[in-house]
Image (cartoon, rainbow over the protein chains, first blue to last red):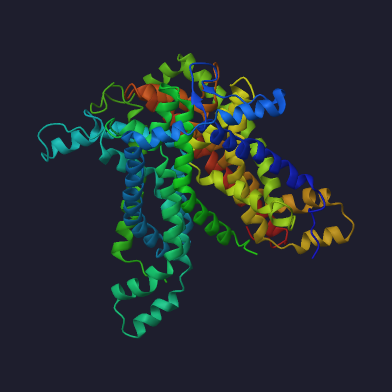
Length: 301
Length: 270
């Protein structure tokens, strides 16, 4: 078969070069700086690579590389706790998202055909409004003199206003709220594809509906569950905005720790080392996700 | 299967209520005359009036719009090229690296992307500001454009392109006159997504911005940290309205284009 546009190398070359310059090279720089030392200077790290000095400059550069930043990550409990906290929040949130997202996606997939596109659009629409706005909307509700306390007090469920903000509960609410469309869409795509005649066959053969769900629907929706879980778990692990605005200051998530090291402490090598370690942590789920993505698009050779 | 049980209706209704209630509350309270969230002081446009005097917010909004339009346009061009490269160029050297670089930013935590781009700009000695944020947003959003356009390129009949090429139409002209009209709903959707992602981004912009280039999310974020203010509710309501109008308008345009093509008998499925 002919390759219509393959003849024009520029189509490949221009986006390729852009991604190398703005995606690949920056990571090499992060890796390099994570091996540097913090100094009080501008930029705040050493050694600097001096290419004009030629081979000697390169040797001098290599001699001054150090693993100090990584050693610090290993020795100070703050970092380990941050990583564990991030994994915990991501895992619990993903589980909550599945629990809330699955019935929603299932309900949409079982609604009348003509209604489905509208329902899907209604789920996606909030995704188009700003992330920051959606988190901020919850501050309105959760703050001490906010609506939740007001409603609960009027219903006499609590006597005094409770502090909902600055807690893990608030983080979970914010994360579940913000990521729900990411979970529902892949689930819906998988559930919608399931052939209804399979469930009819199960029913005809005397299988109760609940059992048919566990034996037929759930296994067949597995690709959607995997895609939705990865699509949520990976970015939640590195989340910054939600824990920063809704969470407490006791245990920071890794995204916040990186932010603090960089902006408050101006420790660029440690911030870079955190980024490298976080990336290493997420590499396996990212690779699995990429594989799924390719299969979904149908370009597997 | 058309079995709509009570359980399904309830779960859909609860899910949608959960998604829309907080936004509805935010919008309603932007019209509240009282400063307190729990006290309803009657309808008022006071906070909107106050916004028009807030020069810092207005500047930030205009900065965000300019960055959004420029980066979304660049991202659409680059992302469409990348999609064509991945679906039409066949095998080429470094294809695996290329597709990896296209998919990775989609799930990469923003703090890492932001940090790495900032270190690039520092290392290359560029002044940070409008252009660095634009480049950063272009890089992030072009990958979303690629995924959208790519799924569209895979889904349509290649024989039209091949016919044009067989009849001696040059590749660029074939793309512009045959392919582009067929994939343009996806290209337009890609632009919209890129624009709204750029308008939305706080983390990457915070890393890559410099003095004098404060975007709207950075401005809102610094205000929100100090607590809830009705003015913030008002600016958020305006942003929600803009996005909602844009989404509805673009879906109408796409639908009309689809109907027109259907009438013209091309029978192209959208």
